[in-house]
Image (cartoon, rainbow, N blue to C red; front, side, top):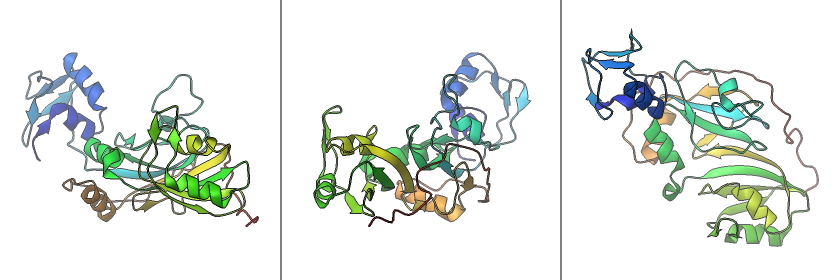
Length: 265
């Protein structure tokens, strides 16, 4: 095992987040070789780690899940004010968190992982990773609207101009858009600048990982080859992984707006 900080080791082992690991260490609930470690202490092969008196079985490999977030689900693990959160839907032996959120009203692909470096690599704006969406609006999509959306849009609320992007009309009220950045509610804000209201928004791809045949509330574990490619595209060394296995957990969420193809071409 490569040497790593104790908080990262606990996170990789599925015990808790790095922040919670620091709290457990400060509370004296973590022991390394019988001693309370310092917050930045590194551990390696042969070190014995106890959490609340229980030994850890060992570091989990890098896990990445592709999850179909339904409409109405809040992207957080715990929120006392939310009707349903990711923590209510995703039950996996290793603790994972999301790389790039979707707002409550949106649906589609989320990547979840226990590897903080990979999550940051996917989310880092300067990496320019592609994210593809299907969007439905309340007015007819015009050629002028498509052109202006693709050229970049100044968002007054954020004082930012969006990057140029690929936008393609797919129906009378629908279009496909590929972004390489992730500003807050970016697509909804872009549409609003031209007087359009976003009726439905679904993310169907992150980098080379697609939504595939997943249904809302389902997820699967990525195979090692896909995780290797994600790491490589994020400029990271490949971490040890377990065997990629399909894990489907159908859950009930609010019905989305994509049941039928828009016939008004």
